[in-house]
Amino acid sequence: MEEDFDYSIIPGNFIFCLNNGCSRARTCMRYLMAAHEIETSETITVINPKRTAADCDAYFPHEKVNFALGITHLFDNLPHRTALVVKQRIIDRFNNATFYRWKQKVRLISPEEQEAIRRIFRSEGIADEPVYDQQVPQYAWQTSVIKKWR
View (tube, rainbow, N blue to C red):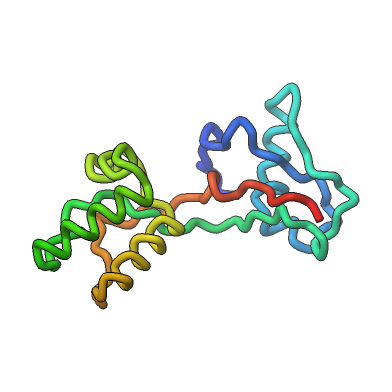
C-alpha cells in the first residue's frame, strides 16, 4: 500500500476481507485495507474468509481507474442540433442534477458513465470520442459493491 494513502477515503460501508490464503489477497483492496481498519476501527464488516479466489465475486483490484472531470467542451465539435439532442439524451439517462454537477465539476464521471455517454454519441452517429476537461485517476469505491453471492 502507498505510504501516503488517505484511509479516510474508504467508504463507511466498505466490506473488507481477512482471507490471507486467497491467491488474490495481495492485489485486492478489500484485503489490503483490512489491516488498517483492524488497527483503527472498533467494528468492521468482512467477507466470509472461507470463500476462495475462484468463488469470490468481491474481488476489488488495487488499481486506479480514470474518472473524468468536467464537460466544458463535450459539445464543441458537434453541430448545434446534434449537440442539443445529445445533451437531452444524456440528461434523460442521468438526470438534470447529475449533468449540472458534471458541468460545474463537483462530481466525477465514472468509467461506466463515460461509456454510456460514448454509446449516446455513437447512437447519434458521432464517431469522435467525448471530450472531458481532465482525467482523474481514482479508486472506484462506488463500483466496488459486492454482487449477490451465488
